[in-house]
Length: 305
Ligand SMILES: [Zn+2]
Image 1 (cartoon, helix red, strand yellow):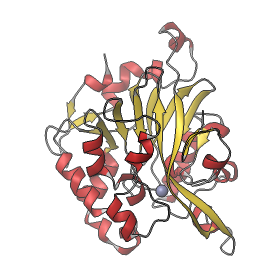
Image 2 (spheres, rainbow, N blue to C red):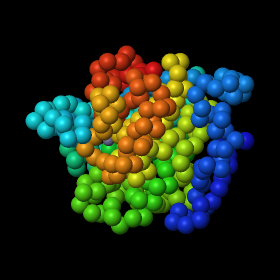
Image 3 (cartoon, rainbow, N blue to C red):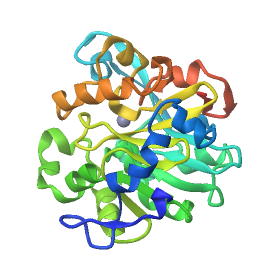
Image 4 (cartoon, protein in one colour):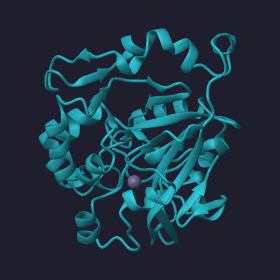
């Protein structure tokens, strides 16, 4: 059974007809796709290996280190970059992880060095023909805001978001409260609301298999329903961790950014994700080292694995 062809229908806050990829759908696949190098996986044949690219769409922005490294270094200034990621298989089929902000939002927020992520991805040859899946790790403006442009740019692609994230950012009036509203992207949430019920949006419930060798891992804390992407690579399992931590140092020092909506959930998610891959293969959300320390394959694009 292909988990992605299975369609459950969620009762409750999501509109009827919205595709839901849930625990039931992954049950059969779990032993193969969510376990690490087990005999079961070998018996089912080797999983495909993917390359992971960091695609810088803006930055650097220099700001207090404490924003990216929990409450440490308020008087220290460090640069951060803004990224989307591309996960590419041998046949060129590409899964995009996050989509950045819209051109209008980037202009309104005066994001330095902004290039629309669709244009950055095109430098890698990621386009309408080969982008089949887009993972939305969470609904902050710098990760989800470019939804309208990406719906048009990647017409074959389905978009994947966790139910907890969708319910909060699309349905919950608390997103308008001051500590939350600053990172909220109202236009993107309107588009998500519109997409619900269409076959372009897949609402995911918990950990799920996305493709052979690619899994979605629910990791709340930074936001109510952040998900990370675990990818089988030539070096073993790797994780596109998005903003579970902003910096590589966060994974080493057991700290995330200053933007955590639920600290206890975040700690549990951190432990969970760190158990899924070697620490040097867990990639953070905003670290300039992803641009500086890896082989450059095109302008703004580096190969992480
Ligand atoms: Zn971010």
